[in-house]
Amino acid sequence: MKMIVAILRPEKLQAVKDALKEEGINGMTITRVTGRGSQSGVRFTTRAGEFCVDEIEKVKLEIVQEDERIDTAVAIIRRVAATDHIGDGRIFILPVERSLRIRTGD
Image (cartoon, rainbow, N blue to C red; front, side, top):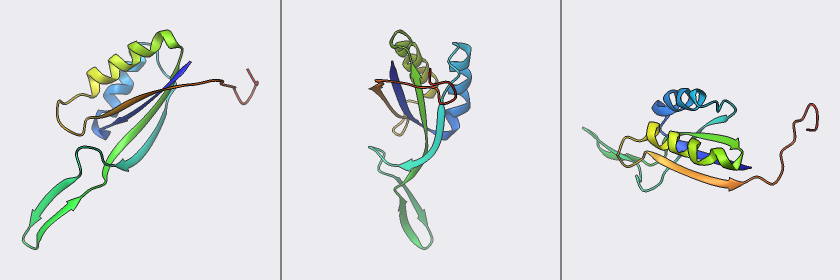
């Protein structure tokens, strides 16, 4: 098993969830986060001067899947979340050693 951790633009979340659901991937954890990467923030100019917002709102999506479904899930996320602009996000794939259902211990 592996965990996909995807950092996305918030406006792409619903489309990504819908596309994953069509593929039968329903279980996920969604967290609202802030951060920055190569985008390094957004600069605004007002009458008072210029300022930079360097912590951009993003969404973190965590999905655990069997190894054979990881490539499909990653391809869906990349296809649907892409805008071809800096700040589209990042995908990390991590090994999951063990998973237990709290209610049953399975």
